[in-house]
Amino acid sequence: MDKMNMYEYRVIHCCNIRGDFELKPWPSVVHVFIKNCPQLRVLPLWPSLNTIQIINCPNIITLPNWYEVSSVELRSCSGLTQIPSWPTVYNMLIADCPNIQELQLLNTIKILTMIDMNNLNKFTCDGYVADLTIINCFSLTNLPHSHQITIYDWCPGICYPSYAVMLQTDFMIYDLEQELFAWLK
Image 1 (cartoon, helix red, strand yellow):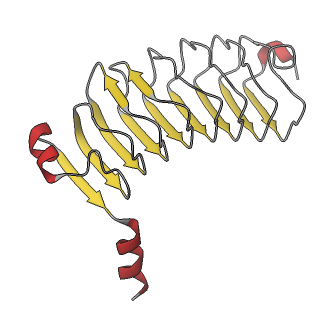
Image 2 (cartoon, helix red, strand yellow):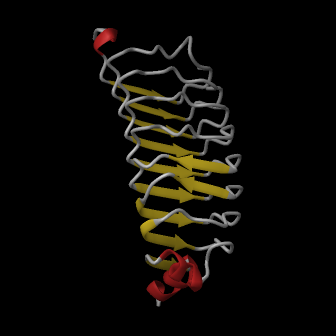
């Protein structure tokens, strides 16, 4: 395959890969999937990137400002301290990135899921999130405007019924233990 016309790029279980020198910024790459690369620290600026999934890469310290990315999934990236405000992101999932304390998104985000973001305490969005799901984000105390907010489990800073009245939105709070217990009966 001609590397200059590469469409999808997968990197899985590469223990020694570190970044820019090994991962080339091929201009035609649209989809990237990276999983279990413990030494990976830096990613290139893929100019045509549309979707990216990064899973269990604890030493990634920064992410480029990809101009075309519309879907982002970040799981278990403990080295990240911030996420860029990508101008075209529509759908984002962030899970178990414990060093992110602040999240600021642009108005293009429509679907956002945050899971186990235990140190996230400030979350702002320049626009309106259509569908926001939050699971176990116990330091979070504020939410942006959203049409539907679903909160599962432990989010003590925002789990109050009066918060729904303030936002004038659909607001659902679930306790996963009670839900599972009811299902097992």
